[in-house]
Image 1 (tube, one colour):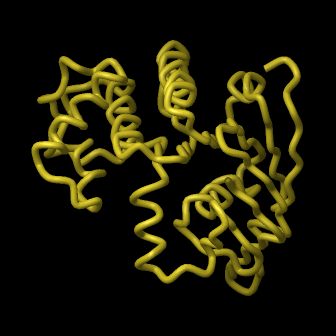
Image 2 (tube, helix red, strand yellow):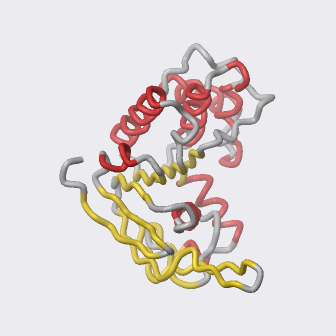
Image 3 (cartoon, rainbow, N blue to C red):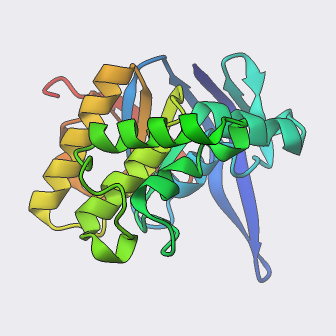
Length: 227
């Protein structure tokens, strides 16, 4: 699935060079569930952006299914993201003027899927996250947990190979956090997804089969025997 080799990302902050990633080597297999932890500014979100093709490394390779995302033309990279990678963010990123069903449908528009099929697949995706009775509700009419479920449905409606989640429970209380993680883990198993999640929550990290820790752009990975 993923093979990262010598991935470096440098930014310039004033006169200072910042190494967000510093020679990261990482392998993620098909169907893996990997949690990424580490201090603020350690490179977690930058690594997730590399995996999702949202940013390019300064040097190194980010290979997904034999294709180096770092070298793809922008149009083809956009296509890879649209077809193969689902994203879930802390802030939900829903369009406030669209219903839950319409928000989910937006993920299918770039794929050229006709309107009737978009509606049907969006409804099915929302039912799979427990929102079958909320298809016509606007984001402002739903709780934070329900909005995150819509965001998850939008991420998986296109049937991606990869699901990337950046602090997906960061804005939620403990009870809702557990409900959202139950949804994510169930979808990971049912759909055979490769699931990579960034979190500050040590409780969630301890439950992951594999745990990567990023500090100052350097990565260490261990297997969680008790997960």
